[in-house]
Length: 525
Picture 1 (spheres, one colour):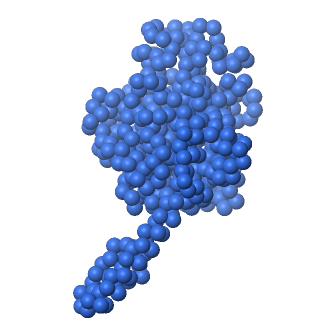
Picture 2 (cartoon, helix red, strand yellow; picture 1 turned 180 degrees about the horizontal axis):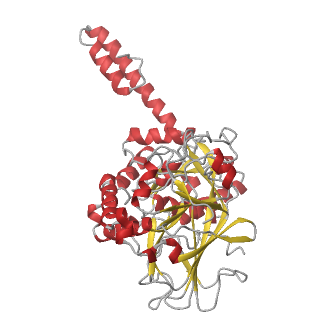
Picture 3 (cartoon, helix red, strand yellow; picture 1 turned 180 degrees about the vertical axis):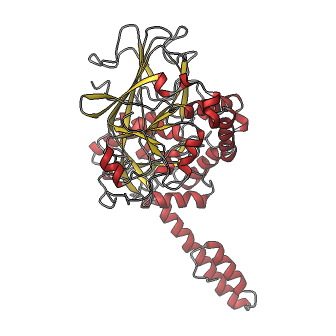
């Protein structure tokens, strides 16, 4: 043990042990050394934290400070205090005790669009008055969001729709069950510690993080109006918080039709339909009924697996009729090249389809994997880049097929990569199916007559994320990313089925991509 250690506890232990045999005079000398050690450690911690702290007057014109330090890494922090059981609330208190409490926001008390609008309006006012610190903070601002994937998606949607000249990059703290977004960018998938040391360690990672652009995707759904209730929310249909009803998206939008309701929203990770969404829907329904039971991440994951077993997905051919298979439910069209739709042939055994943007699904699994050189040449497939304007479309037959992802180089059935995807549901044997976007599932009614339900996904734009240096997500523009990705690796653990207006261009986040009044944020993943 060395008294030169930077660890405060080690310093104290060393000094106490060294003073057991000292005379009174030497004790006073050593005690003064001890105080200097403690002060040096305290100064070091203070200087580190100071580089993230934002002055009060920047956050609101009604607040003021006597001393204005220019932080190198200014951050605004949003925390869903009801995520992760008690963890969200504990994390909120720790961040507020370390930083300026006014730069740490509880999403249960104030929505991110309100906060960011107020801060950016204030920054513009200060810059117009010649405030150099305001300009520095705007140019270097970073955001941290702590919660599940639904909470992270909420903030991403708001940032997308505020149309800022510089989009602040976002780091995600994993407080949910799946935590696919944090895991994809290197922030882990386990719920973090909430003590001061853990928070400072995370801030150190934020300081060293790199910026990455990721694609954002626009989803539009057209369906007949429900027989009961109003448009938004839609009893008895409970849509994700990121989907909102609009009578018209744009004058020229082909999805608009008299007598139908149009919904729009966005996602960053995935849209899925079928088997996986049904399991997710059952889990979320159970959590709403008994929220007191779902306070632990391991318990949540165990419940998820149990539901998958009890629903019979390991023996899907026995327990689930073929009328629920994707090919029986919908026609799927993809656009690889501009204005050129082609129907996607889907094998009759596929019971789940995933349109994936990030290489992290169902708790960190990578359904697309990395196609080898032969697959890339024969089928024009690429690795799953997060900023190439393409979605990876993957299919699964049953739960056993999903377990293939746990094997080295395992992957689902690679169906296609596309810029746009369109699902058309007509009258069939099934009266409903299950859908999910970024962890939020819903039960979707299907046509009972000659009506059609249409879901169309298209590329919207990009947002900035903060990522650790060794994160799983890769950029198509990153020169350090090998184009081959060791493409000659064994790719046999899986299968491919080959040959089988402005209003429109926004999520609606700043005004409508928000949690409706009366909805508990604890219900967001």
